[in-house]
Image (cartoon, rainbow, N blue to C red; front, side):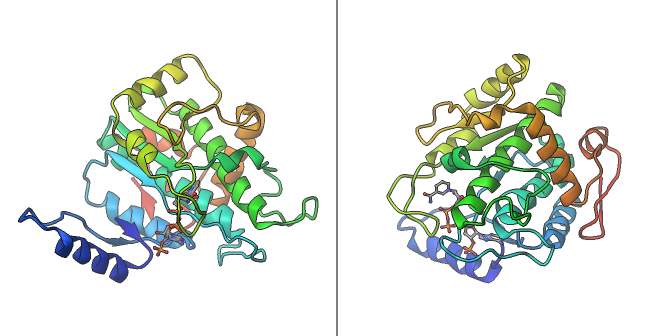
Length: 273
Ligand SMILES: NC(=O)c1ccc[n+]([C@@H]2O[C@H](COP(=O)([O-])OP(=O)(O)OC[C@H]3O[C@@H](n4cnc5c(N)ncnc54)[C@H](OP(=O)(O)O)[C@@H]3O)[C@@H](O)[C@H]2O)c1
């Protein structure tokens, strides 16, 4: 479990352990620090994880923010907060963890996305919404970050060779009662995307058909059609290139990582394998 507040997470795990009524095995959950508001933190986390030389079977990018009604804010890396926490940091994490994901292949990257991507737009030249062309609103920051994630994931899905066996999925949880939104549903689409054997098959079918969007799973665990703009490969390619630039990776990072070559990242002062 990768979290920004390890102490709180450890207390929570202890609580779960204490609440178990039947005598059972201790919960096997390790807590590691990862703060998505800092790309250095993301790169350091990936470095520590990769150093284990262990397989990674599933990466679930669940953490996200929606600062409803609040003014526009920027991270110390210089990026609009929704864009960094919801898209840029998970994208950097997935890229840097590729050596471990390949070691764990067949493996999956599950991005917890949102139907709100359908009302977003992404201008690769204005990822921070600072050009003045569009007035900042928190819902726009959130929606744009979710659309950017679908578009980046789609190019990732397109470029990664089928033999690598690393599948990427955007899962929408529906509306759940949390800090982000209100009204009960559940995380079952995320768990479905992470574990159901039909999912890699679905990803492979989309790839063989050259479908322009990665696999998207709806709250009811059925395939979901992403927004019309998500299907625009030309703008998705621009989002891919701009994202790599923003997260400090070279444009051929994916290909190099697949080949097992070292890749220099601007953040964390580390080298991925
Ligand atoms: N709730 C909905 O209706 C809904 C609908 C569509 C999509 N989603 C998506 O579902 C995902 C989970 O959201 P949620 O509804 O469960 O919201 P939530 O209850 O607010 O949980 C968000 C989680 O993200 C973590 N987080 C926030 N900033 C972080 C950072 N800088 N570094 C590391 N972790 C950070 C939080 O950590 P702390 O515990 O430390 O605060 C928290 O665990 C998000 O991607 C969201 O966009 C939710």
